Image (cartoon, rainbow over all chains, first blue to last red; front, side):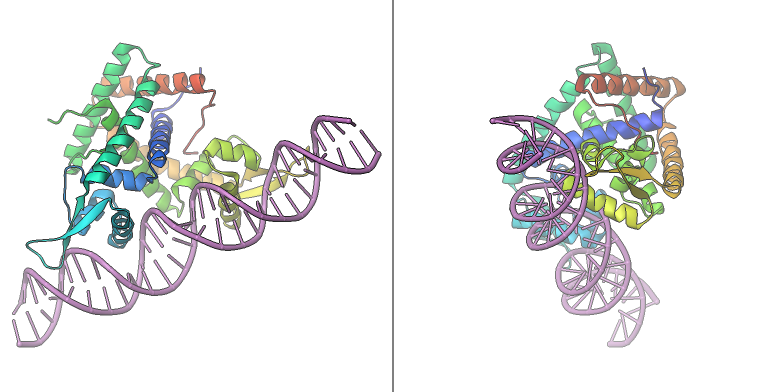
Length: 149
Length: 149
DNA sequence: TATATTAGTTTGTGTCACGTACTAAATCTC
DNA sequence: GAGATTTAGTACGTGACACAAACTAATATA
């Protein structure tokens, strides 16, 4: 029974989760970042600038990301009503469906992954992760976002 | 106080963790995948083939990854003593130091992140994550790997 | 109004990942 | 043991992704 430190454990867990998400996204021909984009846009219509901040990317990276997403019919650029320099990025219905598909597959992965734990542990883990995220978001002024749509 | 599902929570947590790891890696001019490579190689000297499996990559992807890593003095290709077709990928001392540097920074990030939780919760979380990983590894025949070096 | 700032794109560079096609070495089959 | 097959790894071409720097247009500020 190997001892796993918190740090290593969380790192490994994050790779496991990202791997699952990536595989599910690939089933729908989506990359991880595009899937994350779908999640972020599910309940937002940010400007490019805001999107860059939400995703932690440079604004020039977002241009390319949205170019590709728009070309594939996942998002549209809507001119901002208040600032003629900027546009709002809006999810299409098609993308919303795609996102839901990825989320469903991913959910079953996570459920399977957690299936090895007894019920009580599972509930505890959910509560702890939730508490952690809320506290972290509060401390960093980051608002919580849905990553999977 | 938003309610976060287990699935969304774990996805968000994984993005948070990967983000932290990526930023720490970038401080040392390392990409996420290279950092992961460092972690995987810390206690292994696999063939290219084995490495591909460990990282979940195509073998042709591994060629490029190791090319770049070798060019930067992070790894060396040592001819296999038993099979003249294959080589073993071995970490250099320099890479080992780099990996330790990333791990230190990352550890402080995680510590800070967990700092918002009371002691008991933190201990519980560690135990749960550890149990989850061990169970998962056992179920999937995957041996646990250190991701941060 | 003149200047500075901001939003977004363009261009060029590098990493990363894949599939296909290839070479050389091992393994198998007869 | 010679010939066919499999295996290990690389080469090449393509595309997504990310960044920095330079640029344009619009807004803010002085």
